[in-house]
Length: 336
Image 1 (cartoon, rainbow, N blue to C red):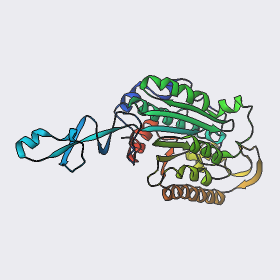
Image 2 (image 1 turned 45 degrees about the horizontal axis):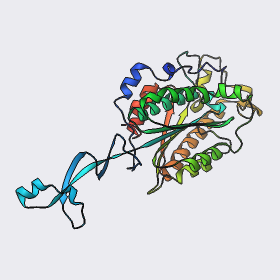
Image 3 (image 1 turned 120 degrees about the horizontal axis):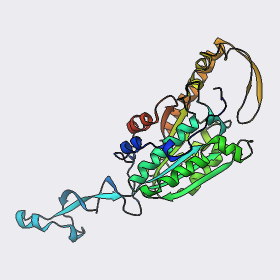
Image 4 (image 1 turned 180 degrees about the horizontal axis):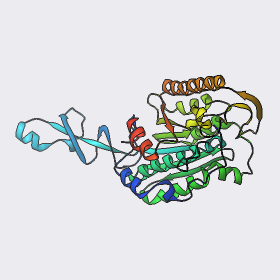
């Protein structure tokens, strides 16, 4: 994917979340594939029956049951001892980790409406944060990239959405991060080190979402392995891997349209993260092989996630952010 001169990314909360979008997000809640029990009462109704204020069902009394939950009206009418069951209110935590490496700057085209992968990631992260805060869940954020890692600790309540937005605006824009860090080297230890740090600091139970292109020089396997350690049976985190890609990364031929075949011929390609360059001759056959390799890479990532109970979702930058959240992520069970 060709990275053009970076187009200014989101600069204010309104650039991340429009009023019309938040109105639709207000109808959603986080939806985990697992049932989690939290440390304090939230606004979540789990499928697990417990002791909250909302009645669910009856069952026959068994010796040892708490007599406070016996329904004496039923006993008086039917001479049967039954206990009341209730839906248990459970607290669900959300942590969103966003990739701010330089490759996330790809995605903008000659179309002024196009956005980079970084902008897509920021907006999706803000939308998820909004849903979590609006439903009184614990929400935390982190960003990883060439300048290291930044973290926003747990917060709760819709009044904190500006804190989440300000954090994403400051730390999740690769162009701004690179300028602040003086440009330069890929994060030592890369994705694996960032995920190891995240795995070691997470606590309680909840949903963990990683938003990235997953195009790391060292690969994604070690990093996802750290996350998978907390996503197996009986584990505390439901993990989602959201891979953000630009159409030109999947099909470089799209870059040539309207650009006089710019992707064909003798070219010098420079890695945006390492600065390493390579001379190559790009042909139609080479582009076809490239497309096959990308397809294999994406399918390999999806399979790797599936084998470790990590939900994989691919998001494309030419899709509307609203569609990505309200349809794609809803369909995959992250929100509902």
